[in-house]
Image (cartoon, rainbow, N blue to C red; front, side, top):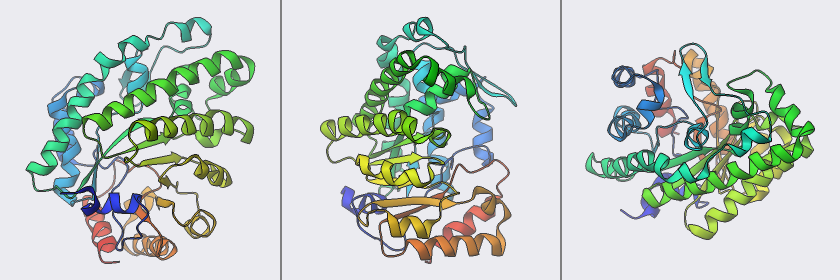
Length: 347
């Protein structure tokens, strides 16, 4: 099957296909009983991400159940710091835990030479998923690779885990700008290597997740979100000119218009963005992705239908991918996802 026959790739090429393709961020995860069964087979989350057989199966689970238009690689945005040699563990109820990097010595201890070997099991997962889509009758579905964007990944690396405001990271960007710039530079190059390798292994499009982009004031947003995104997009276009890239500058607000100038083929919008405003103000050739509130999906019923209708109405007539404004949450009822897919398919 040619790429032009795949609904998501047609949309990312600028075609206003209708009904729009649909997939959901975190569509492979804890809300699925089949995922929980797989997770129980390994000792920790990283072991699941680096087991190609299990990770490929998890990636395919939501396609088998719901028939989404895309499978997104099951992995984690912190694979890059793990691959660079920074310690990484996931603790129940706490999330990721890393030894914090707070100075030049910490940045200097990162090991880019480890990347090829560390990425190898992830790339094997990509190959298995691409083959599995065809073997299981989903040849018209698109395989999405992804990576965390440099600033968002740096947040966890500096802070040592999750945070409400990532104050240590933002302080380092001001007080130790040269050190922080070096860290962002290392992450930018590692992200280019990682995404390019995923494409070589079979990913047909890739997505750059900048989950914490909206924490930054405008000048730093331009330096640490737009700058790296531009460098990554330029490098990928040079290496893989026909492969589209989706950018997700979460909570960017009005700065999403500047982000849209870096050359992404699609911009994913978070829950806070007004889809009608975005559709009016962003370039007509740019695909938009989003942006149902994950908790509206949890609520289901009339609330979900009305929210979905409003998004579809705002995006009609332009390239558009239906998605959530952030990742699906564990308490999501399975039948609500079924109802959402049916509603979008009937648009």
